[in-house]
Amino acid sequence: MELSDYLKEKKKIIDKYLEEKLPSEQENPTLIHRSIRYSVLNGGKRLRPILTLMTAELLGRPFQLVLPAAAGIELIHCFSLVHDDLPCMDDDDYRRGKLTNHKVFGEGIAVLTGDALLVMGLDFIFQNAQVEGISKESVLQVIGKVLEMLGTRNMLGGQSDDINWKFQKQIQNKIVEIYLKKTSALICASLETGALLSQANEKEIEALHTFGKYFGLAFQITDDLLDFQQDKKGDEKPSYPAVFGIEKAKDEIMKYCLQAKDSLGIFGSKAELFLELVDYFQHRKE
Ligand code: GRG
Image (cartoon, rainbow, N blue to C red; front, side, top):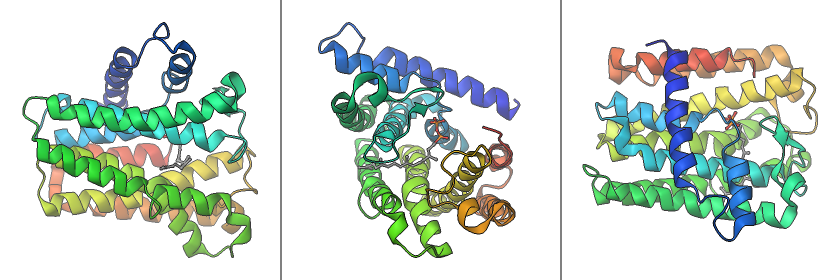
């Protein structure tokens, strides 16, 4: 199957699962449920949960085994986007082509929507223990891994550095460190969730973690480059193109893509889809 068809198919599966499992707009308290659905069912690419499903398949497991946890990771990602858009953070008006949550529901509900999505995301992961063929221990390991990747040494720490970036010396290593924390960490968690639930061995988990780090860096620099070229806040944020220029940013994307691909060597030809995915996202236009 073509990668683009694979991505479409898996996105559809994740969207359907989220649509069915999220509380309906009619359930009390209706306002928060409406707000949650607004910020989840709004056309995200679903990259992170797709990585979880792909990892299960890479390890010879049916993707259905890891679907609840994959959906949980997407909810956690949506939480981070809702909070990232708040006036006290990036202060964005649009997300995924629609008004941001706080623009529609107000700041108070947006903060609570983010909180709810984080809690629900962890709950979805916990529910994966009910799936036949999944060991309870592997679910515990996943929860531990996800919490590690969200904490102050990773995503939260990255965001905290990010919002204070003007006060830091703009050295290349600092930007890489922020990207590793705020973007790669959740991508690593997505991959390792699929791996742990599929009983991967240590070498496989390590390879997937390394892939996540480099792919996350390439993904974030590409994101910055697209924003920069569309003139969206490029000079206010720590970003490769803003600090080092477009050409250097492109070189770095290429370098990290190669490193990401190299890290999956132990899987041989089974990792073909991952390699195609790296190329696909390297050349994305939105
Ligand atoms: C982890 C406790 C805790 C707090 C979160 C707000 C915050 C702290 C972190 C935000 C981090 C952030 C927004 C990173 C940017 C990641 C990124 C590149 C987002 C865009 O991802 P896409 O392109 O978006 O996959 P879609 O819309 O397709 O899902």
